[in-house]
Image (cartoon, rainbow, N blue to C red; front, side, top):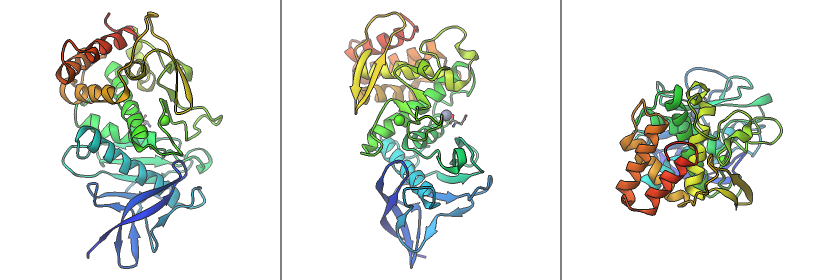
Length: 333
Ligand code: ASN
Ligand code: ZN
Ligand code: CA
């Protein structure tokens, strides 16, 4: 049956009122986005397997901004998938996770008070729990971008999810999740170098992770050391997140969209940033062209330098900045 492409309204929990691309068939609307590879958003309704039901209703306004309406988390998840698709397409020319034009799908309301979200290669899908008390779904823009980016990493460098490569895998999701947040330019959830600042995962309003100084979370490392690979991948990601911040914004104090950052370097030598757009291009090229499943921090430095050479030249300021940013996390010199 013919499905018309529509522009619906999402009343999200974290990003305010947004436009969502939807599908209409007769008097029925669904969270189906045929303009982005056919991405669909499903309601697991607290189940933990299968797809549950496709979000479906008789009007095209989704959610009410709170958890009292099940479609609110659906609207956040659909918006996250939409913005992540557009970020990859318009920033890197990448058409979907496999660069084949095919969309993944998203599942909201996984389990009961489940405090996590995850990507799964086997379903080629993103899944979101509802958070503590089922009141803080893990569907914010940066988390959605993080999870979908795990799919990109799986289908490019394939960084093993353990040891230093696992930390680089996690950092890649934080880096591109942050890229998505800045790309979306949403007034309710403006871009920042914090991860999960909207989902109140700590119950005290603090973010899950900090890219300018990862140790602010009490567990992540700011710089590389020989013991880094023994940590959980969400903590060994710290130095690479920190490198990305330094490469983008430079060391020291800076206010961006009202948030104050203060980024140190491991050797105390100041780093001058080249801007987020160039840093993203370098990391994407490094990931998709030079990194492999076993890339460690030293090899990530080489990959990023190779990417900078390919994009900007071996004598460029961008190449020098990559070296300086890695030196700032105690990798190379
Ligand atoms: N939300 C977590 C992540 O994407 C799930 C996990 O630990 N893999 O990293
Ligand atoms: Zn992750
Ligand atoms: Ca963020």
